[in-house]
Length: 251
Image (cartoon, rainbow, N blue to C red; front, top):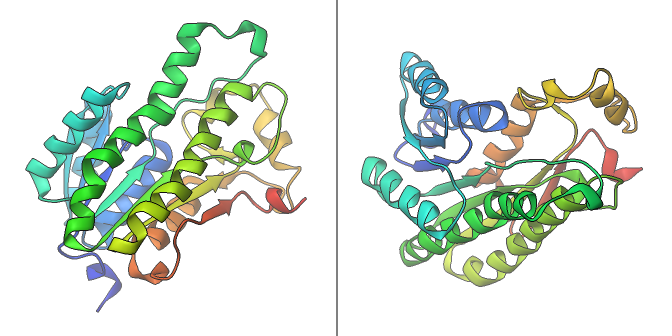
């Protein structure tokens, strides 16, 4: 099988697929032959990603979704399946990353962070994974963060939400793995994206300098790890959290 057809016939949903890591992942999965549904809040950006995939000969669809609760998650899953059939791959990438002192976070900040970073993935898996298990196959990849692994000043809200996603990854692997559904996570470090471009000058590079690689990662590098976990290349990998952080976890 050629690399370009490795995922031929497979269907995938990538949340937060209009930019950054999600966009790179959608492009990479489509490049391997998967029929991709990408979700996000910006229809213009979503349309551009779809057009880019189609121009390269792939199949893609955009579904507008403001993921925040059970209803929005289940609705997205059903709309995606209506477009490309039963889902074989789910990439829970959509997320927000609020930084700052605990004392300054509001209840609205807390609810928004946990709604998108934890509740939405939970109910997407609740909607999609049972069908995967019935068919005896499927791959779910959750996008976490290196600050889910250690305490960091100003990262309490963001880091704790992603730490919950890490535990869910392991629990879902235990629950669905025996029925053929592999659930894993990637844990990116500082990555050059549209979102991190808004960070204060030099802060991303300063954070990245703490790791052996000494530089920020690219969205393509993170997407490559997600693709690895989505394909049969990782057929014996379950419940793992794959660091894509330039070695930060090692120091």
